[in-house]
Length: 495
Image 1 (cartoon, helix red, strand yellow):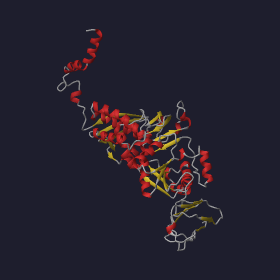
Image 2 (cartoon, rainbow, N blue to C red):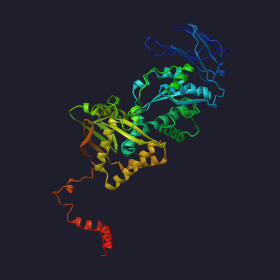
Image 3 (cartoon, one colour):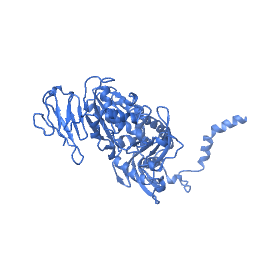
Image 4 (tube, rainbow, N blue to C red):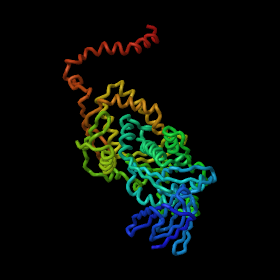
């Protein structure tokens, strides 16, 4: 074990020491007083009243995190120097902030943003990661990466149930679909993440939030409109709109200059965003709408050509417009969606390829995989064919377009969307029942729908019955319904 010696000018310093066990996990030592003997390091000095900010020492093996604003001198027994990240209270190159909550993924861009924020705004950086169903692999080693980049803390929150219950299901109930195809997977995820960032900022006493969205995309709008709506006093930092870094090579160079460990994961040729609802693909050959997506690009669904040769039937239970069960088994929102993703994925369900109009004005081409969502969307709309009358369905469909537009544009917390959501909840109160769908080689077809509130009456609709509906009544109805057309034709013919 390398020996670390820390020298500080005063006395009584509380600190944390993080080192790796042999199994790769992280040790956490939190000595209550530096007056006691500490095996792996010695400390001299620092009154607690002098301690503010977060200084961090990083090496290949250890991360030392302290609460202080004093420079730390550290030398490993190998005599290799380790860069000191000092949380200075002095003004940065672009201004002064106290503490910033950064939306953090652990990739190259957000790893570089951490030291950039410290250098340019003289602030502490609290990294925040939201678990919205992107997969455990995406969350591995994040704390180590964040601390090694210069952050003083990593906060991870499991938002999967909240995401599905409070964001996905309301959009599903509303029938929200953007530009005829897109089921709003990324659009719905951004407000739940941004809301959690506002909460974390309050918890840690931050005066600013930051994100790694580019200046060309929709996500910058979605994040920042949520910040505006929930805490207009927060400062917002968007490095991609400020810094001189132009691409991956510039980011790697900046990281090396500031001794930030560069993520060694293989760079995907596609830009992807994954959550519990969908997986999106952009970039590379997809930038030309004339190119067919490669077969090996997809990750959530098998190629329909390779799907099972036998269809699978799935029954979806719905109460008041919201899914509650799969094949008779009640599940939590996130569990229900996860199960349908697995079922739909193995049948190649939910692939779409579209050119869409971004909010910032340009067109972009994206490919989306939404297996469970496609099944749910089909089932929910089918049940409404039983429970909604014609006028209500037409109004709902027209409002669904506006609802989708608001969500796509990042206006989740807009009073208009909230009011429309109340309307959607009211008119789907009786949308309760079950729908059975047949999944086969990429297709979803409905085979059965039932509801205790069905407006369908076989005794009225049947050609064999005439007790309630007298076919002779249709003659008078047609004469009255067509009267305006008849009058116009009479005028034109001089009758």
